[in-house]
View 1 (spheres, rainbow, N blue to C red):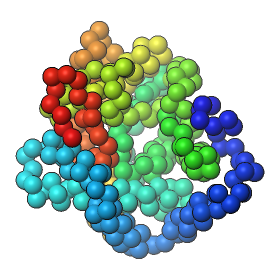
View 2 (cartoon, rainbow, N blue to C red):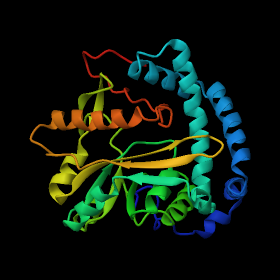
View 3 (cartoon, rainbow, N blue to C red):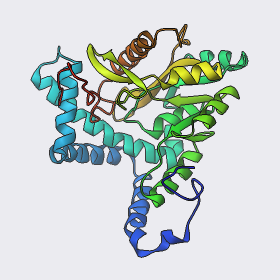
View 4 (cartoon, one colour):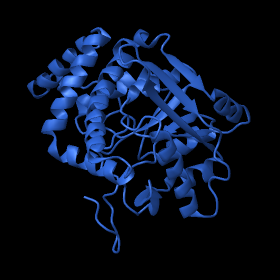
Length: 311
């Protein structure tokens, strides 16, 4: 249980009926109604909201642009701006896709394809847990839902600060994921891996160097978490890259799940080499659909002495 909340995840509290939560309840009902709209309307709304967010969220916009400049130096300034704007549109599309996954999942029928499922099934058949190396995709829980059509994924999550919002998201995710594991519950995570579960884990954000090293990410040194090395070593699980993305005609989108073979010799005896290899896997994934990633996070915020500031 998270230290932030003194109740079980997903548990309803009578306090949620107090006036301080009424605004959020109204927002929740509104979002549920948005999930039943035709995709054509959802797409137009997402595009409008994406343009608005790109214009109004100045700090996030600057971070996104800077990240793209650093990671894709081959792009012209005009291309960077175009792709940065599309990141915000894809983020809003991901919100609608997540609402569809939660409240109208039949929308995904006949829209999903998968490659490499055998890598997970073979690993589990051999008695191994599977740590699915993924990214913070703008598809959000829609990606988890399409994966759940082929295998049972667990997910590592960070509790929300607002307890009502946390309850809502937890309950909605319960329809998608077999188990939800608090990011602070390392024992639970290891236990599930030892039990042979497949757990979606995203080692692609900057959490400093307390449990990480500086390793190149798109050619630029970035604080890279290494906690997964310990998880794999203790649980005897295997690391399998997983990526999902939207493709095709936006008026009739399709969704692709790409699962690659288990990463050989991970963890090795070299912490830095392992971090480099994982970053390279993430880079390869992101090049497939560059704008379907949360570039508005400060991926290069940790800059030890001797490293040039990015932001």
